[in-house]
Image (spheres, rainbow, N blue to C red):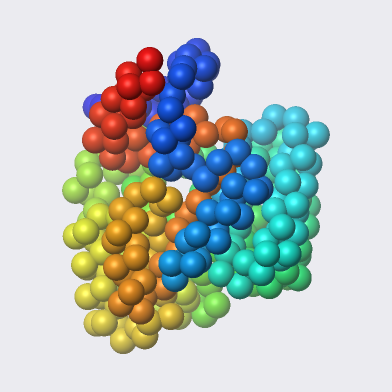
Length: 306
């Protein structure tokens, strides 16, 4: 129930104004967000790659309702790529892009146009793009845009969410050679008819989907912090004869950093999902919903700044 309350809060504009205007210490937001600008994203990328970790950068912002805003978001990704190239980071750092930030709700063709531009620039810079998945109403559109982009940019990554009932089927369709697929649990407030609500059912779905991806010919990206699922992933990778480098682990910036370094120290590829930008409220709420224990940390930090 607490998870549902937090997710509802993520879309409450009044609460958003109250929280974002509160004197929250920098340490609270910076636990999960690199900072506001490109310089912050590059700084954190340097720090993480220096620790032997790979990076996926996400410029925060979604649900764009104006064409000018969508174009500005796409342009910001191009500026980020330019900065990464100058710093020599494109070999270890990719982009994560929310299609809703570049016009998906306005016109899927507009989102494709912007995404093509970003993918082409990423490819020229020596890196790639993964399309983030959002709530279930966008799943079909996102997968259709993915298929369109992969015609010219086959390394474009997909994201699938294990809590959706459809995902095992989607995994089977995307587990082909060259297909990069990030499997996560999911962090949106979805109706019971399309998504599993019980955490145990979500975990069981995650394992079924993971096995499909590891048994396939693609490149699975195992996005979880759950110790039990990480252990299952390692065991299943061995079972299916997966060599290190034929899959990777992905974790969020600020969540279990010691485990990230431990896995990397064992020779595993570990990619850290690093968001940056001013639009941090919705992202932070979803992180709190994924692990409600973080809410105590957040509230305690707010009180300590008063």
